[in-house]
Amino acid sequence: MTPDSALPTAPWAENTQKETAFARWWPEPEATRGAVPVSAGAVGLLAALLIPGAPRPGIDLVICGSAAAVPVGILAWRRGRAAGHRRPVGGGAIALGLTAIGLAAVSAVRASEWLAWGCVAAALCLGAAVALDVRRWHALLATVPLFGVAVLRALPWAGRATRVGRLRLSRPWLTGAGTGTLCTLVVGGLLASADDAFADALVALWPSVDLGLLPARGLVFLAATGTVLGALFAVSTTLTLPRPADQNPVVSRHPAEWLTPLVLVAVTIAAFLAVEATMLFGGAEVVGQAGSASHAERARQGFGQLTVVTLIVLVLLAWSGRVAAAGPARHRQLMGAVGGVLLVLALLLGASALRRLWLYQGIYGWTVTRLNAGAFELWVAVVLVGVAVGWLLRRTELLPRFVVGSAALGLMVMGLLGPDALVAAANVERYAATEDIDQSYLAALSADAVPALSRLPEPMRSCVLAGRPAAKDPWFGWNLSRSRADEILHSKPVLTSPEGC
Image (cartoon, rainbow, N blue to C red):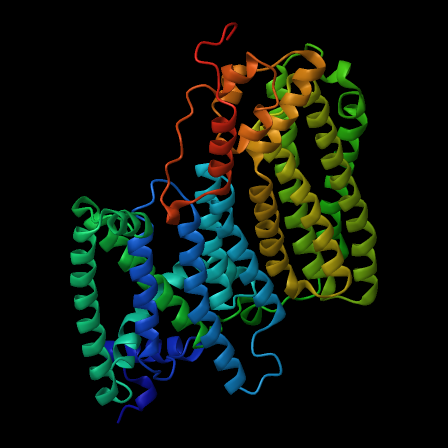
């Protein structure tokens, strides 16, 4: 007879093996209480009531983000405590989670909509990475699809959770909550019809009922509920992706194989710095002189050069450091010496580009794009130094979280400071010194720039602040910058017909 090992594998057997492997590196959580779907639904209902009713990003996003973080944090803490950990939740996870909440708080502090939504998107991605507890590059890069899988797997898991527990207790609670809500709505409507002041208070306190927003509220409810369920599922289990490095172990190689690229790239960067020393380290008269490329093109080229060269240097350092670590101690020493020189050259190139950007803005002024480019260059330099320190201390496993955490922290700081506010303040100071200003650009900035632009003398102040509408946000759409801008423009209105604009 044919041995079993020689028989062909049936399709259902292959699927079973795949499911077993999938459950091994991402097991199904144990059944939990009905509080999981209830808390997720409560957050979804809160988001559906607040977010669609706010015309612009405001404190509603902070409220919903904080409400979503509470059940996720409680469940993660309980799971860690049940496992007997001294710290139920790690310090790194707490720091990244607080950074995610700080990113969401930008929407309540700054009025720039692109900045607010960008920080919210970054907060969601960072929160997903914290919930999944990803620590390696291949898992970090797959955070979004992995979290999508967590949301899909959370639906049947939450459905089973509703059937676990004491149903005799849940039915009275549901009956009481439904009856109380119905009676409250009827009584509130009758009292509102009896007194106009009470009706105005209800309208100001809660979003008005708009049937046109029902589809948007339904979509927000589903999205928020699914997101919270996915996060609760992720913190209830342990994701352990298979590491490609374990399948293909690194072997020691001849130093010439990884040392030659490092030396060639280092020599190239050194030659570039030597040839371009006048342009890179010269004064404003050198940066502003006419040449083969326009001034704006030269500034963009400096930013692009730094980005591309830094990526190449990071890839080379990561690959050569990984290979050198598998060899004898002298390979690691050689890698440290040559890699250190290459790192210094890359940092020097970054410093030169920052200097050129600084001199360039001294001639033409700051814009949001130039400010963001400079901030990105500084973050790249921080990443380079962090990679070097991690390699020297042999703690390269911390680099993925360091890169993501530093990027999120830098974005949060920039968001709270406000690029529009910083650019407006710099241009106001430049106008006081040179009487040169770009009215159309400053007039297009968000309400973040109003406090700085209000310091301009008339009629220039009215020229750049004219035509700004009042905020008129509900309480759940309150924003600090829009509120301050309204107070400033109300206390000192702009001229109706300013001359010289």
